[in-house]
Amino acid sequence: MNLTLKLHHKQAQVFSDRSRFKLVIAGRRLGKSRLLLTSAIYAALSFNQAIDPASPPVCLIVMPTLKACRQIHWQPLLNLLEGQPFVENISRTDFRIKLKGNKPDILLRGADNNGDSLRGLKCYYVGVDEFQDFSLKAWEDVIYPTLADTPNSKALLIGTPKGKSHFLYKFHQQAKSSKDWSYFHFITEDNPFVPRRYLEQAKLSLPPRVYKQEFEASFEDFEGQFYTQFNNHHIVDNLPNFEFTYLGIDWGDINPALSVIGFTKDRKYYLIDAWENNSQTPVVIDDFINKAVYFCNKYNIWRGFADPSRPSSIIEFQKVGRKKGIKGLAKTIAGFNKVNEGIQIVDSLFYQDRFFVHSSLLNTINQIRSYHREVKDGIILDIEAANQQTHVLDCIRYTLATLEKRI
Image 1 (cartoon, rainbow, N blue to C red):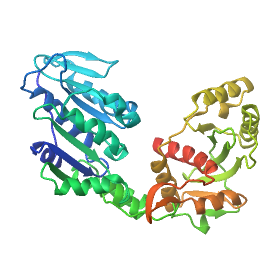
Image 2: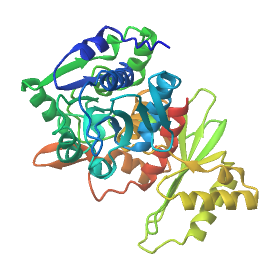
Image 3: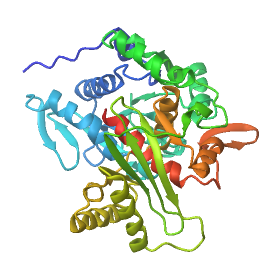
Image 4: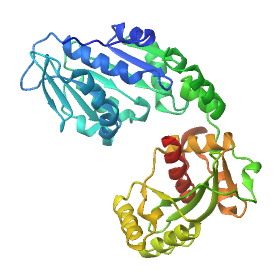
């Protein structure tokens, strides 16, 4: 059986480069995952060295978490390799593909907890995906050392910019000037298979700075405020009719919060109501459930989107919803919780004039206006500043980011 791995011109440019270390900074949908898998498979099949059976090398594909690595890379890897005559065994529990002969295994892993689970590996090849979401410590203290004692070992790191204050900015500058590294920069348009209309739509729907970062792989300076596209015209007195209403849920013993968002036929969102505990008195779960029940009944909630950090609380909401016949509570699920990406989605909805806030919600309006990034030594970091009241904003983000990721 033949294995054909096709790459477009820019992917092939990286693949053909013979540097030991390669860094690719690229926009969305360049085909980064395809390049990574192709490079890993080729490295394993072309391996031609002695293997110490007590410490065999592997070809590692790694992402910030094992869950993400499995979701993105495992099935494509199976599609390419399952049934091939050179494959000896596939472990679906260890996410490992063993090749016949004197070849390294292909292994999927996550770099959770600064890469602790990767310690002890001996790598011939490492493909790092979404490098911007790794800790620098995971690369320097764990992943890089796995390559140290394997002759001809190599690594391909692929990422997307996250601002000039992020470690990747300095890292890419060092890679550009190092003789041990090859550096590549590609924009989304470099992929000949991305429809032009997709790029045109993205330009219309995203704030310019976000578009440059995500589609042109540009390292952008970010302003202090997160919601830069929020303006007075997003504050409304009158509410339209809604197709659906959704409940956003943020857990917390002291600071739980709820939000209610309506969705219209013309795909616009309205923040209708919100609640948060403004006292320092702990809120017991039964009282929090009762508040959620009240909102569900008052606004005919269709579904709830909750902070995913407490799965047992989500199950409790579901149980109460089924017991009381409240469909919105019964259909509560974990919300999307990549913070920066979720914030970008909400701000893009303001930019598109698709998200509005009722004028009665003065506290939430002030929170939206004041929500800002951390400043350290005069440099604006692309992370939340501490000691902000963000619990309702988190509820909003769980709801809108999850819905927009599904559309």
